Image 1: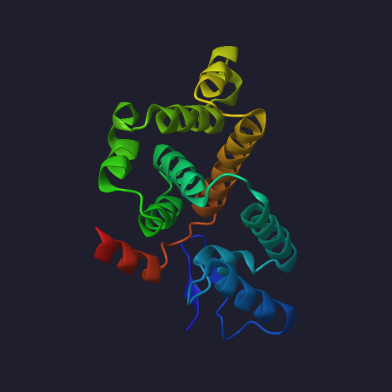
Image 2 (image 1 turned 60 degrees about the horizontal axis):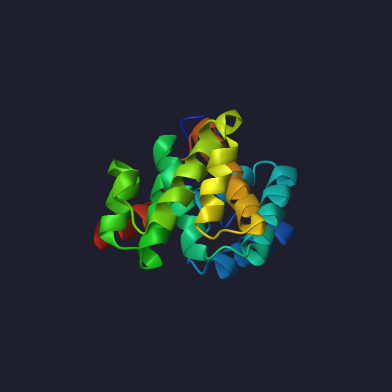
Length: 192
């Protein structure tokens, strides 16, 4: 059965993928350690060129970032929440929960960043959100606050990169009208 999104675009079924696409779908499941191909990848598969570009980009991001995966996930989650991206918010909340981020921290990310601790994480999230939503408003003081929390220039650049990735992911999900994957919705319901 073909699943059509509100955008009118179809999700390419795992059984429909052949050749390179089938190999890429299998690689995605292995790399992300999940038993299904995410809806985001299935809709991007409508354009093999975009699919290849995005998957190469995502794979490189996973392989080469020096930021801990839990920090990447919570940055992506905080930004998806601020940008009201249901798809990315669900995925990143599940990632945070899977990586052991506690309820109090997750609630603080959604309700009040002032309640997120430690202060280092709070500073990182405030900076990343500002970088994603209002990048021109970043000031020398914003960067200095991160340095005072012990972050290196390498880490600051990666945080800005993650903020940009979050904005791109949110834009893709919202513009393509991607539904939250049923597996993700079920797993979130069981983890809350």
